[in-house]
Amino acid sequence: MAQKVVLAYSGGLDTSVIIRWLMDHDFEVVALTIDLGNQPALDEIQARALKIGAVKARVEDARNLFVDHFIWPALKANAVYEGQYPLATALGRPLIAKLLVDVAREEGAMAVAHGCTGKGNDQVRFDVSVGALAPDLRVIAPVREWELKTRDEEISYAQRHGIPVPVTRKSPFSVDENLWGRSIEAGVLEDPWAEPPEEVYRWTKAVAATPADPAYVEITFERGVPVALDGVPLDGVTLIERLTRLAGDHGVGRIDHLENRLVGIKSREVYEAPAAVVLLQAHKALEQMTLSKEQLRMKERVAQEYADLVYNGLWFTAHHQNLAAYTSSTQRHVSGTVRVRLHRGAAAVAGRKSEESLYNLNLATYDAGDTFDQRSAIGFIHIWGLPVRVQAQTQLLKQPGGPLHLVGPEI
Ligand code: ARG
Image (tube, rainbow, N blue to C red; front, side):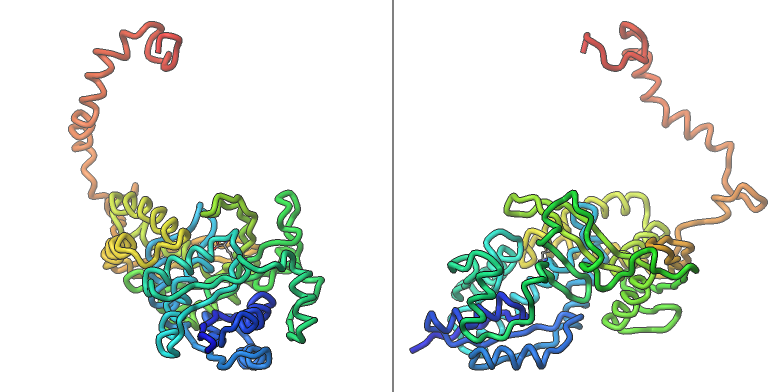
């Protein structure tokens, strides 16, 4: 009897061919399409899966789960990989893995399948996550095994088997999209010297096509989570969608990244993430106002660790839960509003305010109202400089060549 497999089905070329390939290898395929946002024509995708031969085609709307359990925690942490990539694809994978496992259980499947290649990060994220949640399930990644070496071969295979495919030979890019961003790779982008052609962008306008006048948007946060735009309370999905459109119209959110993949390859990726770019910037500005210097320093280190962990597929780990717990506890007072100017491809923080601000005008001002005791600074500096004076007298001033000769042949 054929075994059942649940396939993460996007509706694209790879996963369409995979349905047929799995059937040829004696599997019954349940196609699972997961809506993480920006996924139009779900019913067409569903119909395509059935037409190719899936015994069932399920569609799950996971947008709210994605926002609440993945996007907002990453925003609270300011998680950005290698200073550039806001991790849209990387954040989506563990959620897809979790839903694959849930559906496999419901359907009594022995295996799950995905369309990742053997060269990328996504296979790692899927395999590691499924392994954590359901070690008994087999994970099948046909692209790692089959003989179809190029996209053209896949298209020919599809045509031979009457598989309807949504791409033409002219569209060479590999794209992954969700609410938090678009990831584009392959084609001409593989040449790191080549400027990304305008056609790779869908959500952001070229600077030359943006409005001459800036737009301002006010983002209100409660405990690190965005809750309103321009004073209008919005659910997370709507807020991100609106901000994507607004910032994208002003050309904000294009990222060109030559990144280090987990599997050791350097890879050129282009991203569009207008909402992520603006929200990360605004969130950091509000943290500057509401967190202490020590909290900010520590958070920055945690942010990098958190981003690496997400990128490297380690979502379902205790280490992640520990970092998330720390991050959450820092957000208790990160509430307030940030005003951002969007203009000609750039987002800039124009203003910020918070009931829980640590900024104190009476301490900072050089005008009337100053409450800072300048005479106390004398004693503070005397103690602060104490170890510096001791070391200078005993070491620096005695070194050959004097205190400016920091690095000499004598070292
Ligand atoms: N490099 C990114 C990551 O590892 C995006 C990969 C997404 N895939 C794509 N088809 N562009 O998360």
